[in-house]
Image (cartoon, rainbow, N blue to C red; front, side, top):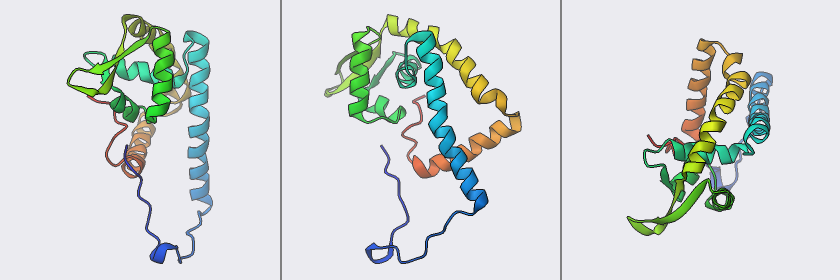
Length: 173
């Protein structure tokens, strides 16, 4: 996972005065904070109601479903889901207990573990996808015009260039 770089402090401490946010910057920042806090929770509600999955579990299954062999190394899956290996292992154990994934040593490197989507897991994510897409549409996509969607993506890409410069969270092709 990439490490974010912040401006270095002179002599170990920042001796410059803080660049406080002006009213417009503060409003923009707080809107990002609010979206980051409320959107995953809203997606959780729909997924838990309709498919007994939380948003993170769905993303794990969805990332696996997009792989030609339905398999990713746990380290790669942790990166694309922006999770620690510890958090992912805990969720993988739960999903494995439900028969939705299985974990096996990577045949090309026995030190690594692969997460593999099972047939039951693939069926689950296929059942969950229409409702999830409908929620994404209702909460985000349909609230914006096409030009606004392009602007949102461009703004997000600029932010990601700072927070994820190595594109570690970008799903594998």
